[in-house]
Amino acid sequence: MDSLTILDVHNFGLSLKIKGRHIKIIEGIDFTLKAGSTLALVGESGGGKSLLCKSLLGLIPEGAKTSGNINLFSQENKVKDILSITEREIATIRGKQIGILFQEPVSSMNPVLKCGQQIFDVLPIDYKKNRISGNKHVIDLLDLVGLDNPKRVAKSYPHELSGGMIQKVALAAALAGEPSILIADEPFTALDVLSQIEILKIMTKLKEQLNLSLIIVLHDLELALEYSENLLVMYSGRVMEYGSTGKISTTPAHPYTKALLDVAKSYSENSRPLGIPGEIPSIISPVKGCRFHPRCKYAKEICKNAEPESKKVSQSGNVRCYFPL
Ligand SMILES: Nc1ncnc2c1ncn2[C@@H]1O[C@H](COP(=O)(O)OP(=O)(O)OP(=O)(O)O)[C@@H](O)[C@H]1O
Ligand SMILES: [Mg+2]
Image (cartoon, rainbow, N blue to C red; front, side, top):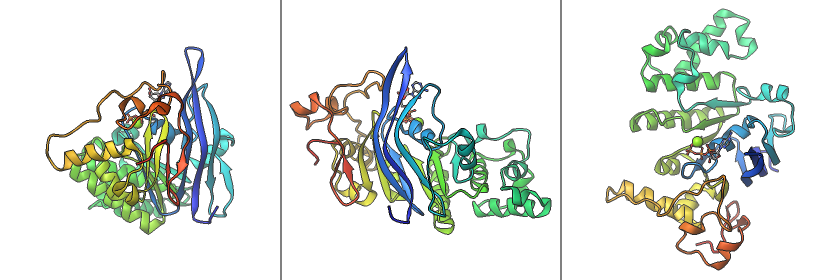
């Protein structure tokens, strides 16, 4: 493990108890996150992206069983497996070592507290000891995330701000605990495209400035390609493809990745947008064999009968397919 790795997820699986039966929802997830890099999680609805993000934060659903490891490396290079530490230890990590940006920023904010106060409340204890320096740090954070009049914003209630401004306040709050990783699960769906791009640009700048690592779930594949170094393509609880964004965007190895890229291309070219034919399988009653085979135009007999293992296709790229492209 080199010193740059900050998170190493190894063979992670999660099963949920549904109607008395344990059902494997997520299986065989492997990836590493490097300090100061962005990993984008993409794939259609129901693929398990949110469940994976929550698991990284130690938010495992009631009654779930997990397997594998989610190893988090601290600055002193100490390792903690999120899956085997106590809830108390996780509480020292969540919001601190790993920050969270929610999908609906408004719902993560208290409507009756001024924005500045809400950020103050989540500052590390050393800042909170002194009200004046604490308040100054709040203003610095609001400034850092690109808000024009940080003093005014600090004095505002959430309902007095636009959606884009609230998302920036939420970003400042997520950064207040000085995390080394920031997880954002579709943080921009409530925003228009220009505001989305603005916040992605700010996050990318902060990533470089603070040596922050980002894990972002993005619905828009074009944005994912532009703003990430690595891509994790999820389908039906599996990682179908993982590797460098540049490589995957030009030479996707999994037919599912290729199909997603073709759909995105059809949107950007403004021709008649395509969809991937066929239905997204229910994760609760999964298909046999490769999960994608009913929708895959390259599927052969073996794809219907047995699920392929994930295999290496390049130095850091993996694909779960018998017949990579
Ligand atoms: N606590 C739970 N109990 C039962 N099923 C669950 C639970 N949490 C998630 N699921 C199921 O697991 C699957 C994966 O869900 P998840 O929300 O992680 O997908 P997603 O990739 O984030 O989708 P979207 O793009 O729509 O946000 C879904 O089929 C969902 O219904
Ligand atoms: Mg989700």
